[in-house]
Length: 373
Image 1 (cartoon, rainbow, N blue to C red):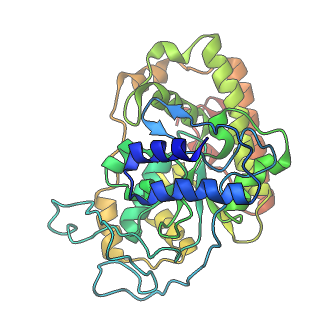
Image 2: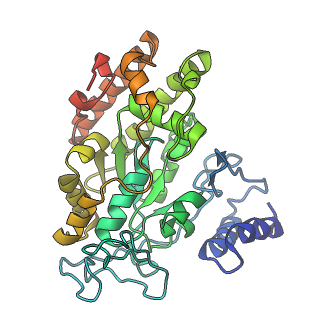
């Protein structure tokens, strides 16, 4: 992709002066000077025409090389004291007061004073929020942003997300100004990379630092299928959950679900990464959100957390539909799919146990061994 093509693409999305526009061009220059650029057109994947994925952390034409070369992560320790000038923010978080902020609950008398800010450029380390698609990544981002007061970022660009106040979506993932950065890793390719170097490439860009968000693969597959056909809050037609194409989709992605998680479980060390179970967060949001903030080194403001608990759903919760009722009476997973999915859940639970991380809350996994939870 030539410089003029990159410029045209970035300017059409975010204008000539945007942070992301500058990052796209500097990204090309960095990879060129490091002899990583292969002179081929990078893939820009599109999901449901809502998400535009910029050339990200993997390169299809330069196997073994990483296209994005982030700058060094300068880690600043976050104090446990609170900044009296910005409600709910820790003193140690350096806020960029010249950048756009967002008020998540503008009509609340009690909570309307809270804002979400960008941190100062390069003041925070890159931290992946990695998950298989359909695992609640956007909801966790909402909880983190509203609880911490700092925007989250992403290795993708989703304009609908930005329109709902997720302004960190529109900045480079290595800006050091967002508290975590969303990624689905190689899951969006629908395949597990053949080589270990390719599997772990993105993890190494994050220097092994990340939050692995795990959700029951049965429900993650249903959610992802709905997203592919209905966007963030819509639903796929019932017919898309039966037949050979659905069987292939679920069979292939069951393996991807397992291997994406296995990569972060088996190839990170010490306390640089952690696991977060969607089902437990849903049941005990205060406890698990406090645990997340502790991992990120951000102090807990109980009043602010109280506001999060009072507005727990966020802007992208799917409404109730006939689909949930249908799947209570008609299991969309065949006997073959049950065997495959039960096996990958069992295998991953063993890996978590070996790593010493929280094991899978099997009793909360609907469809697992015909569980009707």
